[in-house]
Image (cartoon, rainbow, N blue to C red; front, side, top):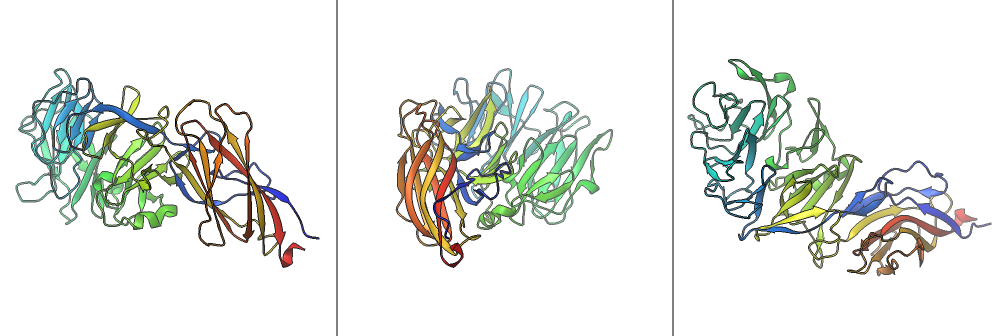
Length: 477
């Protein structure tokens, strides 16, 4: 006798759930996740939204945000602004290269903020909040603080090479020519330097196909190459390098994403390999650690992509805005200042946004939280069958009382065919206590793909999906 009207749960949360009975629950592999974050209960909830916090009167992208003192912003044309008054500082940067993305680097040493961009470095006093040139330091692109030294690299030395790096005198960040200031060179192996960062007592020189590590040893030597910590993985895009709460993470010269575990690079992007392969060869990728969310976000302007790695749950996803189609988040720089997260605009409008859980949309546009997954519910009992109905379990809204109506858009695909016409499900009024929404589907096949898109200004959260199954075919009897 055939089984009729069997109800089974689909575990639509994007992480493993071993609490349910395997015979009663399908656990699909998610094909796509967008604009969400994993909750403490392992559900998929809408990401943060953003809104304008500062508006600099400059028609330029914001290339650097500095989380020191009153907060500072550097625009792509090299101008520097203080964020408490939005006033422009006296001296601007001059080193913009037209053939590559413009992302200056900075270091804080004592009361000074030092900024490098390949031109003459600029220093900002956190006492006077004004800028001036750092004339006796090399015109490098990369700067890092390590112990009681500040180091600059990425400049042309006397031999026409870009392998030399220099450090300031002991705890004297404005002295680069006398005392115990000095310089050394990384290997002249023909591999271009793409980025320099410090961590603990070590300097990391990320080159095209390998990474050289130097240790701060002090004394007359000051820095010494650390052979055993160096490794044969380079970096595709220098600005993709992120120092997260746990380790360095970057997009390597192979197109894989690596995390440095001790002294060993480990690939963490196996499940997202194809997405990064599509970007291979592009050097515009820039990444930032949104450490309060335990996430790294990488932005590609050429591809209009935002890749997200949740290093707490080891989950990859993407984030987008919606303007009659997906487009990249307009973020170009990032910092935390006064317990708030700010991002500089990629659009040439001089805007700086706050990025917060308390902001329910993207500068007025609805956030579309998406998940897409595939199931084969009949493969153990039948050749095919019907999904007659789906029931969604919801957590109702608890914040917004107005704004975009909250809807669930459901799209279905059967046996790798075309997407069927979407169904739009009203998620109920705010504070609605009924946790269920039912929809009749009457889908016949063996393999079913579902796409859920949540929109709205209230805190709606789809926490479960139950389907009613009717197996058919030779094995169903």
